[in-house]
Length: 430
Image 1 (cartoon, rainbow, N blue to C red):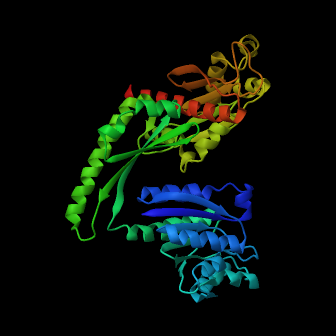
Image 2: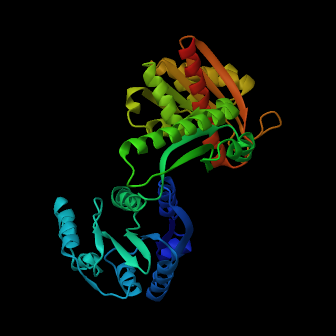
Image 3: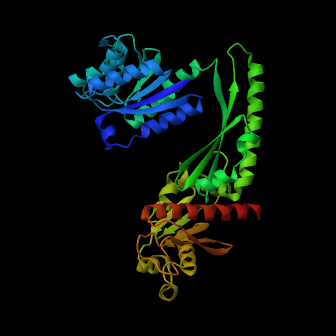
């Protein structure tokens, strides 16, 4: 089955809004076995909208269209969909009822223009919006089953997961459907090196699809297994087929992980901060962080994980040398002798934040994010990471090849978490 994604709106076309919807939708469609052939974008123009929707109706099996379902004059998608389908629009009472309930929930009054959102193409199937007022809808244009969703990511994502993906999956029951997927989270290798290490994968595992997704500085290696299922087959036969695919994908995952070595930090696609948090929970251990060059990014990542309050006690952005001395107890002699970016300094920072907070583990960062400030012995991209526990303290130095400040802060933060991860694993092994 072929699918197409269309984003609407002048802001999206002009680049004023980053189109994250298309990437989210494409990933979801891929996971259930839909081949996405095109991503498109069209502005708020009736003629252009009708033309594009008509073209999609002639060439695609399904399409996901986002944006243009609101109450304002430039929200034209529903009317354009009706024209492309050769029908008119009419007030959908169920959609109107849901809009009213949304306003009632927040004790707000509907404006007359809000009723416009319930004007759907005749015969369209409404899609309930649990997070906003604009309903989505399903409409067939030509040979294509089209799913129309709001452009607000928070609304779109909920509707896509709850209503669109299950409907598409039901259409795929007699075809090729994804049964399982393995995701390896990788850090410390560029994408090209990951690809080189996995050379020969397709020949060894021809039934497993290999893909890579780079979200700097982490790469996710995706292994996807497909299983041909027919709705007439009994459940036992389906279970046998799924088990066979699962076994093959596990073998493929083991093979890939062996070649990528300790650069694989998780086999379920989790983030570095989630893995570190899980290790802390398993050890009933607590953590405090002292940051200089990362400016709070390590702490931000850690506290993005639900339940982090159970192990994350304290963070301090001790950017200035005076703060390192006054808050963490770093000695003036150390700073005068070796400077802020040095193994001795980050060890004292890690020990200081651990002492200050009473945490089991202390983690510290200090480096040169750039683009200026580097020297011959400490070039831009240098970072020192300190880890302290009751068993002692260690420091590590890494070098990033980047000259961009934001990229270096991102990689420094993950380096710090990865260093702590390895120390926590070593602790468990000992």
